[in-house]
Image 1 (cartoon, rainbow, N blue to C red):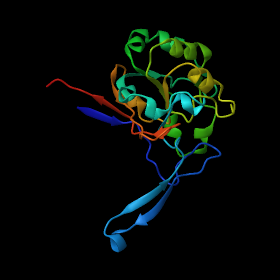
Image 2: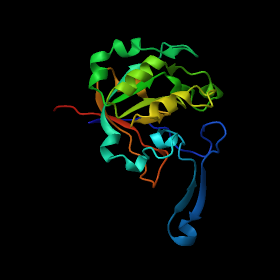
Image 3: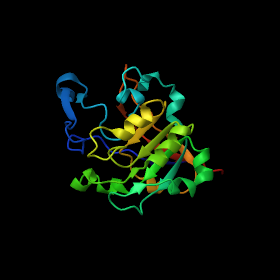
Image 4: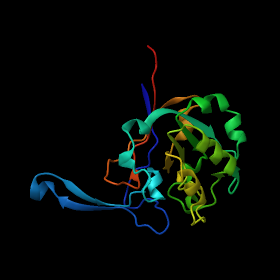
Length: 217
């Protein structure tokens, strides 16, 4: 079995969404004083590689802990959008040219190559986003989730979070942000998981996103 880690490491000096604070790792117990090490972790629920549920935008909608565990595992397909330039849109043509595999996937993951900018100011730039046709396609489908290697489903300048609201208004789906290494997943379907922490009434959670491939011996 081959396993690929699609997750950015959570660190105190990591990139975070503008307006939020970076994580804090506060020593709580030490080897010297207590005989073991324990750390108080302080961070936002949407830190690093993470999941948004519908409750992120709408009160009374599904929280992460209300989803069954199978929501976070299934077959995924990476849609390669690395040819797009800053500010361009992910159009429905990217869906249509891979339609057979797209229709068989539980998760659609969009590779913009943006993870290579992680840790630089340009990561917060004008990354390409899905257009209305792609969003409508996702909403009309039976997908467990969509994911991106950028910091948001919406452009970073859209404080109204227009795409988030349209996606979550009626669709019981998860949205994954800040993925990495999607180019290593190939051009076929693969197994994918993105389990969050099971937090009460959770509006989001960091995840350990992985892809894996089973080989016949």
